[in-house]
Image (cartoon, rainbow, N blue to C red; front, side, top):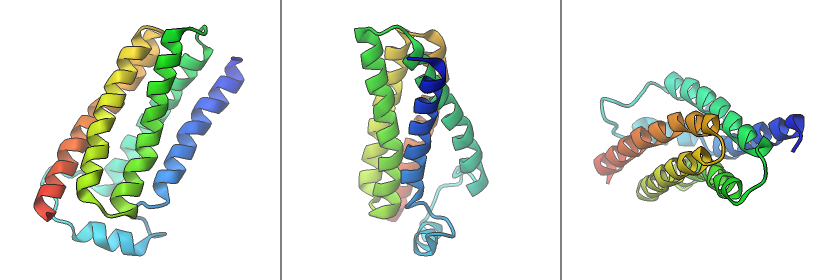
Length: 160
């Protein structure tokens, strides 16, 4: 794939995943969701709201870069597996917000987050076979998702 098309495809896909996820996020556009989320009992290690925005800005950039690197790599079975794993991460990003904030299901959101551990680690492992920079770019997402799963499980436990 041509580099310009690969970049547009990769970063466009990440943007769409975030737009889908953001439709349900606890923002001023969703005041009921914001009130609901604010009222949940959360652990001391819950980051302040601005940290989530900063973290996801960086993660989105790296996720887009990883996708770009995979899209410009030569076609192969390994590349197909890596791109499929990468795509599952995008589905998880949109799906998690829909389950947690749209459906307000703390238990199911914990499950989605746990699945994202597998997809993000799997994406790094599969990407390593194709492009090491893509694999390294995916590593922060894997680490963030582990943290997010611990946080989500604790929020679920405190509010069950």
